[in-house]
Image (cartoon, rainbow over all chains, first blue to last red; front, side):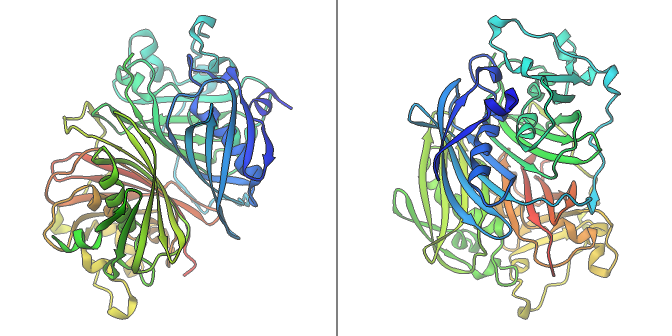
Length: 263
Length: 263
């Protein structure tokens, strides 16, 4: 069992209740990363579902979640031949923290009938850059659980040269040897620095809603994660992420609506 | 009160229950249009919420919904200063039909800090085309409740010349005089023919999940609705819709995951 599998483990208590232990290796300061938390929730959902693949997950983030024990409470809403629908709530200290609706189905892995091209050109991985690991005092443990190699202009903000538009693009994999799977994709869709950093913002940018779709099972190897946004207005921004696998297939799509950071 | 306001009316029974009467003027054959049903649900949600604007709505469509009486059952999940979160379920004949999570907030209407450009160039409205009204035997009443003027290549499928990629673009307004508002936008994000028609598919393409975000309150006048897709695979497709208002502002964004029609 890898560290990621261990950190996302969901232990069945009864058909609608799973115990989880939220791992301090996926923190962004004090709070835990939303994609990691979705991976944990999806472990419980898929374990209890008649279908193996979480094709559609929508989540509303109610509160900031911290490491420690928690419960995933399930309600089976529909169990059909093609899809099943589950309501899953992450509960910590007796309080709902994340409310989700998940559709599971069975992907067959056949070749796409039609696919768009990747949303941007990426330089080869050896021309991409890492950001320095933050010190332990930052509480940013997420970075040491994964590897990101950024398209250089999209991390210009780090050296005071933001590109001026919301964007972030990187190659992504877990820090440990672990092939991508749907749970890793849940992490990948929320793994980039907020795209508004490239538009000159900083600080904690809390996700209010995130929906992601699993479009295909990913091939082994690096993933490419393309992040962009369409509008920053009224203190809100959207972040679209596409994840492509090493075989050149679009494997996940997400959009989140978040608040611009105050930091 | 306009026909649309009447057709989306939600009558408070108690703080968590609203009676609705689903109107046969928004049907796509037998079933009702998903965007119309979301408008009905959002009437109940916003009436019961401390915040006026449905900034984020995610919906899982469980079953096909038909005209007639129904109930919107609410559960208040969070009521904060910035946002409130509600779970809303559309129930017909005692059975849940659509399961949603809605975040409400208060948009202030200030000018955007940053906006992308529209996703495609649209010809002027007088160069766009209407599709013929379907006959009454089709049960397609939705078309007579709204006006769509299509960018011609994106309805090439209608005369046997599909463009070969998932797309649909049109100017949109209600058939009656009625300024756009958040409820009209809920209809607009699901008002186009399925984008896969342009890729050669036909028939009823059931939405499994649809999430849309209200990004600004729309100005009066025609809306422009841009639909596209990124992947058709394994019997699934995604449909992205952006809605821009007559003042050139991005006012709504949606993505749905749907099944390719068998028709």
